[in-house]
Image 1 (tube, rainbow, N blue to C red):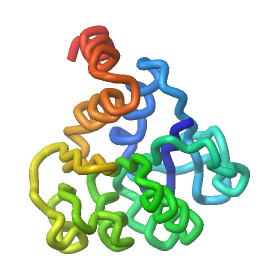
Image 2 (cartoon, rainbow, N blue to C red):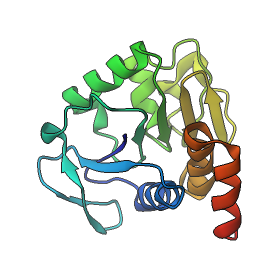
Image 3 (tube, one colour):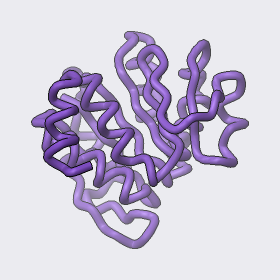
Length: 175
């Protein structure tokens, strides 16, 4: 199972585009609220009902963990941070877009890796910052911002389901 985490203030285009394209690729994906309630309010006042609450999932089956940007307080979600660190220690895939790579940088997950992020958050990435639009480095995928949501999702699809599936969804979406 793959999980995408929603916190109040998340970037809707980054989350919804990723959710939509991964599900079109038949990739098992669960939306998880880290707020303690199912309804999560995005940065542009769009409410999304998460599939699960963080505290109700054991994540033993986690393949990839995905962080949309916008919710800059994810670093304060200690159980999520612990999960990200454990997942990284096991060299399991993690993806983050926009401001969310800053969380990975602050946790030390990007050490020895290359990454990109939304302008203004580069200092959280330290030596890992290489710029670029979508960067895949070892077990981590990062993307610069909202306009790259589809590219980010296609990179995840290719990682999880292969390039043939990514091409099929790409073509079907008329991208």
